[in-house]
Image (cartoon, rainbow, N blue to C red; front, side, top):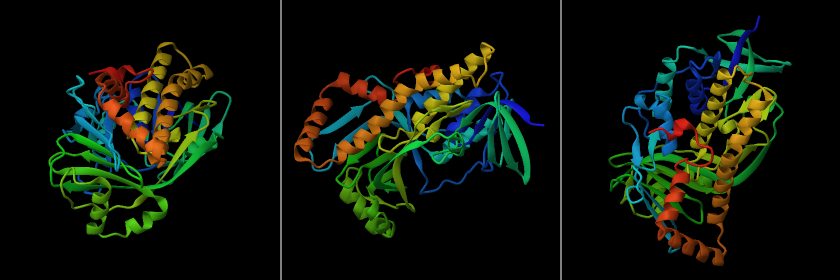
Length: 404
């Protein structure tokens, strides 16, 4: 006999786990299916991936009880410096001058993953199916049945709502027949950590160049997270560089604002593409996070956007239990789309437009870019508005994201 749930979340990554935590104890029977065995990693890695969390995301993680498990591993982003190599305009954002405590924070992805696992361990009403792999999805009139391989045995889970939080190559999305639009940026990103001669002191840098953007993120003391983007056809050459040659390339692209850079971690290229699902829903199915949209890392919107998906969906589902409503009803799914579409469209379009705009070498456009940067830097009210949008306060903001 099928194990009947109200909601099954497939994918226990950062977004799927956040959604599961938000729904714990809401009154619906919720299952989280995750392929990887949960394990807290205590050993820091010098080449680990780092996340730039928007202020709204931090608020939400505090409300979810996750932030308490992070143990002060986050570094506040208090200032942001945006520039383009070879052009005269630049934008300087200072949270204190704009009346804000901080724009967000930088956190090793490992630490957020650890915090989510610890918080999941506190969830008393959640059915965690792990390690497990979904092998089949079979829609029925009032439910969806999943076949799941767990410890060499097959389980059958029935659910009234299936949530695909299973990443860019989502099995849930493909099984639902939802097609995607793919945009290959012909770029690859190298993500690593390095040491700076001068401490960044809470400054995050975004530096645009002819070869792609470079981001340097503060990690406290003299450590920084680096995202170096370059043409895909040059990625293999860069991957083969030794540390000294790699640092020389970074200095050529970024300059010496942080002094001399040293001790780069291991790195490998990640091909960059935008992948947008043509629909966020199918019968009794909804997509969140990278299953719904995968965006360019420029602007660090990926996880922040996915978390907003999870928050919006959780609020609609909590209201549904209060109204004794079907969590997989067409009406609820339509309201989810209505709520998420403006933010999703604006964020994915902005990211895509920025990649194209900042990479265009047309001379009149270069002049216009510099003038626009200079004008923005002289208009504090506009800078505050831009900052708030970047902090995640846009559209129909979740109540959890507004909490302090």
